[in-house]
Image (cartoon, rainbow, N blue to C red; front, side, top):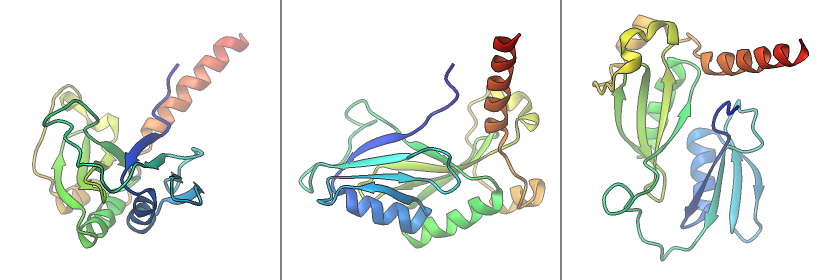
Length: 180
């Protein structure tokens, strides 16, 4: 049974440049870094994973990604925050780093879109608690994000960790089934 995505691995121009960006802007922790800059393995704050992101250097002569325009490929990765207050903090940090490219309200989640130093898109998002999804669970919604309004509606500190609780409940149910 798959319980979620564990990590992503990217080919980048310079792993050290990515390392500095993810440490500074998103507070990732470096777990392992190649002494020659060939690779870096990083963990997101609060993550139980060994690493959430690995980057491998392929050189500064590499061209920009054309995925989604000229070739197939990854659209983006989504990094989740626990509260709307954290999303608001990341909105400012991404803007300060000139990495913020847009935002959307998808009903089931509130999202910020940004680019890393190589132009690879990523998302920082807050998952709306599933009990509030209603019919929007089955709709592809793209509305303008009203982060201040969402904070007023849901609260700055309302945690959204239900995806983890759901996975743990599934594992617990499977364990009980095996034990019976």
